[in-house]
Image (cartoon, rainbow, N blue to C red; front, side, top):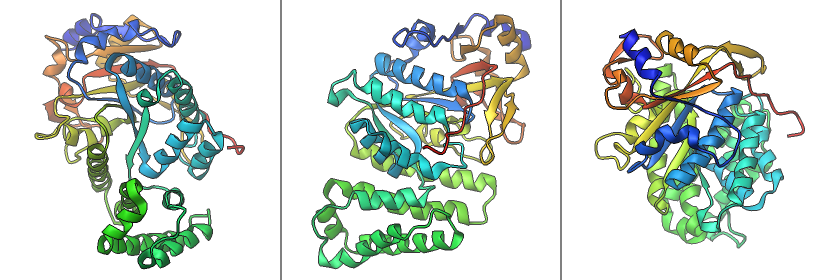
Length: 394
């Protein structure tokens, strides 16, 4: 089988280059696969510099070749509300406000920040209705950002008497927020979100009339503060946490997708979220997208990044460690071909990957489903540096 894999890979690849913003000859290997597809996902291990280069490359490619309308982000809805405000105005103060609470996480990095500035510049090439909009479907990891959103979407006119008091408490809670993120403070904010959720359910019509088209986002963000508590604060195993979070993200996506004008999506996500089949005990986001009855069934392409001797920035202390995720049989072909970044198509006619079982990423056991049931392309990245943390001016 190893010889078959090697023979197949060396005839179904393309080297990716980053010179020339509008030159996509190196991605032509995908062109014949785009017809009828509605969702395009690339999959990364976070905090590696080449990820950012690939993300803007694929975004431009899918815009030109498939006319994507939405960038689907591994971000909460509240954060992408402010990202879209930045994309409308170019005001970097908005962007810095988004990133300030992320210090200590993978997200607090220069390449990720710079992606939004590149997207802003790229969007200037298009008429207003053709510009790419960012859609966030994650749970609300940062409560400060969620509360800032709730306040930002409140109308200027005075709230109706029936909901005035609780909205005043929301404003006061944000004004008194301590960025130290103490567990006690998080419990207070989560408790208030629960009270607000109950009030919205009892007085939905009043909230709808007052908030207008902002009501959907207001209710969604508040609900996802409660979702955060359920995901993080329960005594969950890693498998349970991932199942809870990815189901919540899929539910969020369904709500948002149904409210949006029709359009295709591209997004770059953490690796496993893009798997289109259940991985042993975990059902990831893309496997819901590919379920029977889903609009996106058989309309999704997943592209997985694999790393050979790359640097990865760690969260917390931002040290750099080496990462190697390239399987031996793929590394053999990739070393033979050379190159910094190479894409391989796995779903061409006669591909051995239709018969190769998927190896579970967290137990290493071989699964019943095949590799192409999970993803259709791999991108091998050799020798990339790690991304860099932002500095305190952000």
